[in-house]
Length: 409
Image (cartoon, rainbow, N blue to C red):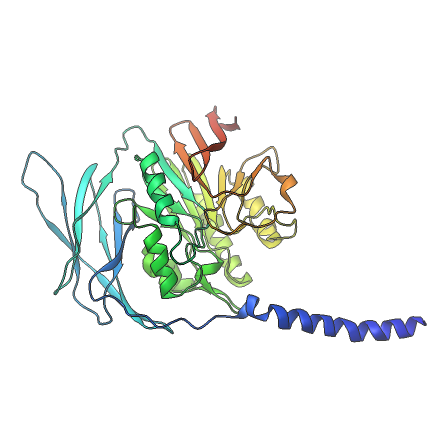
């Protein structure tokens, strides 16, 4: 066959192959199934405690009915030596209309909290929630502890509720929980309901933080996180309203968290990178932890998320990030691509399991289980313990600060 004929056939075959790939993958890339209809409860539901802008502040979020009401949070400090003084903080509200129905979201901030126990409840004109409690831990020793849980993304009537209950019983003295994206299967009310059923053992009593994953986004050419996500995790709202992505930084004692929305289009990623670089430059925290859903170093393929690797990893090394926590790839891995920090980890707590073709890059690798990580930080040590959800310790590292250097043990 002549060379000219081969080129002719190639130019015919390539468009056909491309068309077949596009047709077969269109729904995966761009399809958004219609959301089933739903009814929002007329009493407060999906009450959740999240972090405010300061370590001693909290934001309470919830939803209730389809019409905006005057609402507030009652709370008081539990002091056995005196009668409780009940305080009030007014709630902000926003009506959200989706394909399946309408809900009104509420959020209220409580500031300047003291060490100790608080009780609170959500109040509407016609109904109030039960009283819930939370505790503000002492910060005298400049230490903190949090639990990182990767993708949850459970099926309807899944087992996350029991898993979270067991984790909370094993580790009953933590400052907050941090979710690594893909908290829900897709942005439909039924999956939000399942997500909150899963975290019910801790939602009202433990402080919850989260980053967004691809399953919190609606698919499209230009992907943006659906608004219900920052309406639940309300610390994202100021940045989301400005730039339409979920980026936030939070200082808690001697650690600073940098929460990054990794499923954005390239323009939003570039803007976020600029915000992240500025935040890292200005940070005086002893320990720096970046959290994003997609791992810059993939165990599925060396080409996965390569754009994040090019955009971010130099920034992490340059500004002395200690730890990068991620999910998305439905296995556990710990990586340290160079002699310098940071350490990268990948984790998940989902029923889904993936095949990992690039796992040789990991220092520690495990699959076939669901996982969570406990991060303990004090003045000179960061310790990360990795458990399967049945309580088996499978990995442990320490980063120790000596003479201004951070050393991995």
